[in-house]
Image (cartoon, rainbow, N blue to C red; front, side, top):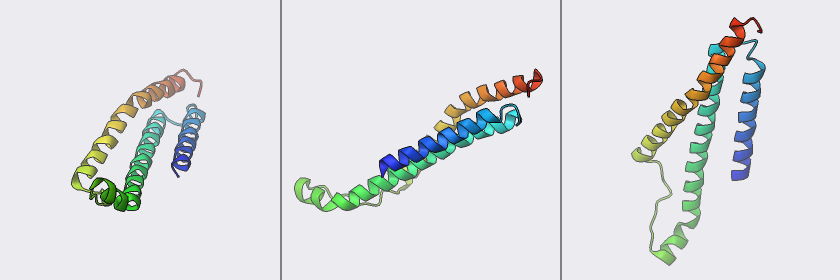
Amino acid sequence: MMKNVLLLSALVSCCFTVSAQEHVHGQGPSVIFALVLLEALMLVLIAIASAISLVSGALALFSDELAAHYGLFLSANVLSRETLQIAVIITLASIVTSAIPAFDAYKSALQSRLSGKG
């Protein structure tokens, strides 16, 4: 399951990166900027959803063993206010972090357009 999610996220990342590189000369700089940000946003949302799903599934499957062997009584419901706050913070951090390469791609597309290569 995790291997499939990683493969899917790598494929999506490659598609958007190739799409952004192919359209540097055809699309405006703002479109390139948006594509890079969208790629990062999609990857982080897929990662958060898969992490929450995997942890919930593991807790649901192994709750009896954890209770019997270690005395841990954990709920499989990991969605709480704190979890959602952390997910929002991670999403915002990824957007801010991806703005750096997005701005570089924006500058490259703008320079390409202004130099007449596009």
